Image (tube, rainbow, N blue to C red):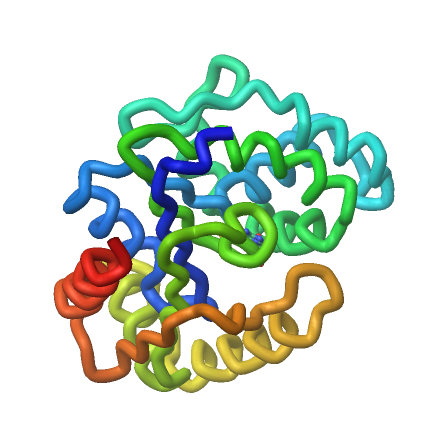
Length: 220
Ligand code: C5P
């Protein structure tokens, strides 16, 4: 294992902007980027396509381990088809959160995630990046923001996609998801003790990215 290759782990609640921030930090440093949630979404998509029930835990674990997936030029390719947009569909979001609670799936994805650790470095985004997958990450960031601000950001994002939504509904949805994510027994939403908190309620994306880059320089 290339333990000398630096990893920056970023976690945080839903709609905290961790995906965008992780990608920008990776771009600034010329690092690879792992969106670990996409792997859980891919397992869900593969299960849905082969009509496998969520109760088939061993088979889902096998899918997680052997899934023929490639990440290429911003696209995600499963077997021979581009599934970048498919995995963002609501059915995959719901399925991902179900398969993410299955131990065999988490186990099956472990080595696959570790393999993303390649020179010159990796920014890994998602739930257990700093606790389980890369416990020796040089920097662990817990990115958060008030539920109100996160709901507003989500609303803006949806508007840009031409989707109408109501702020109170989004806010309620986020609060429920926070509660569910924090209380689940498998990989709950919880910062590691050595994580640095970054509250982005009053920060824009670039300010958040710059703070992380500063912390990274300090950690070297
Ligand atoms: O981040 P994203 O919404 O793509 O994650 C999809 C699902 O996978 C969520 O339910 C999330 O909790 C779960 N997940 C996880 N561990 C990770 C990344 C995502 O349990 N490292």
